[in-house]
Length: 160
Image (cartoon, rainbow, N blue to C red; front, top):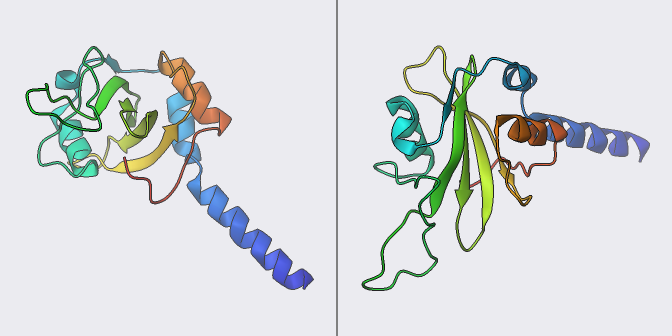
């Protein structure tokens, strides 16, 4: 019984460790160097826009700007159509793009996606999590503190 319990604990700890933000990502995000703060979707680099569209399963990125309303759960004829996600802010570190965005009804929350910058033509998702805390982080340092605290919801099959 003890051996089974030990094996179970080992498997659980490996699963939990593999879900956490990779240490190299945390070191880079916590560094003082921020290359660029982005507050408008159109200012995201084109490869990042393409990567986000791919992650969101869209043919073209449909992400609102911070000042736009969020889409509603039910679309009605004659009503304006807005994206179900909107950018809060994004930034570049030395090695990564970090995109922080709000998701609308029915599951209102924020999410953070970290994409790699170097060594690939198209950025790839390295890590992501949902931020279920209100109010949402207002700036880079607040978001990095939330990531470092380990209080964001992570799941391997997260649907962004």
